[in-house]
Each structure stands twice: as structure tokens, then as C-alpha cells.
Length: 248
Image 1 (spheres, rainbow, N blue to C red):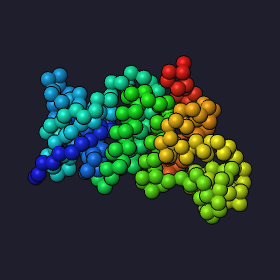
Image 2 (cartoon, one colour; image 1 turned 30 degrees about the vertical axis):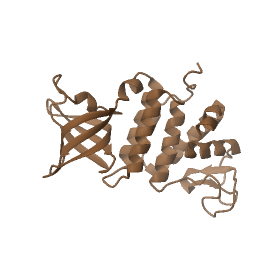
Image 3 (cartoon, helix red, strand yellow; image 1 turned 90 degrees about the vertical axis):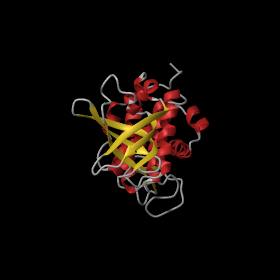
């Protein structure tokens, strides 16, 4: 059985036996990998701390029949401690890795890996509001997975926008003729903010009023959870009305 090497971000871990862990990671070239890290729960382990959630590592693995075996791990990005020290960063990061775990498989693209690493790096540095980083990640990873929301023309009939309704079940913005009865209207500035989140226009996002960010977050969460079919459990722990870091 061959060995191979790849860059990977750690999504989650599970205890195995008395000293081992099963590590689920999203790699750059091999998609999602589940591997056994032997002895990492012992205090003498040389690389246990490099295989914790939110960490990015250069890993060497031995290809096994069911689970691969981690042979080496060198740190590429130590984001875990800076993220865990802030509740809003921590909950946003958990929602990101949970989504990545749900969306990725062995055929996951390098773009999915790079998007997640970039989001975790931004969270660890406190570059923007944690919820905005999460919202941008969710929109962009959904687009990479083939579920890009329509934010201009009608998602059902392609009637030119802008439109005043956003219905996640129908694919995003919809015209009055396609909107189900009772669909709430969405302000154009909220849809404009969604477009900025999709494009990563952080000067616009950072300057947006908190009420617009909150409205956009609600739409993003509803859209992502509908298409993932099961709720993103970590979203329930997010602080719903948290101010931007540095604005307290």
C-alpha cells in the first residue's frame, strides 16, 4: 500500500481506543480523508496538537484498507488557539468545518480546501466580523458545490432583476409572479450585501449597517440549511446579535 502526502485542514476528531484518534480532514488534492492518528492522545505525542480542529498541516499518510494512517504531520497554519479564544470566532469556525464536512467527499476540489483555509485564517486574525466571514464562506462554498443562489434575475423564470423576494427553496431571488403567496419582501440593500458577500467585497461588507448584516445572515443560514437538507447544528450556537469585534 502506498504512502502519500498532502496539505489538509482538520475538520473534526474522534477518540479511538486509549490513545488514538480518528481524524477527518479536507485535503488540497485528495478531498476528504478519514485517517487514524496513533498515540496522539498521549502527552509524549510529537504531532497531536497539529491534528486538532481548525489546524492546517502537511500530512504524510499510509493508505489503509478502510482508514488511512497518519505517519507525519507538520504545521502549516496554527489557527486553533486564536479561534478558540473568542466565542464568536469559535462558533463560526465550527459552522464552517461542519459545512465543509457535509459538502466534501473524496472528489472535493482544491478550491473548497483553499476557501476553508482562507476563512479560518481570517477568523484567527480577526480581520472581519466572524459572522460575515461565515456568511461569505457559506455562499461561496455552496456556489462551488453547484448551488449558487440567484441574486439578480429570477431563480425560476430568469426575469431580469432586481426583485424584492428571496426564497431559498426556489434558488434565491424570485420575481413577484414566481414568489409563493405570503413571501416576505427583502430590501435591495440586503440583496446587494449578499452579492458583496459572494464576491468578497470586504470594504462594502465591513461598512454595512449591522441590521443589514443580520438580515443577510438570516437569508444565508436559511438557504444553506435548505440545500444541505439537514440543519447545520453549529448555527444554533452562534451569537445572533453580536457586534463586530473592535466595535464594542
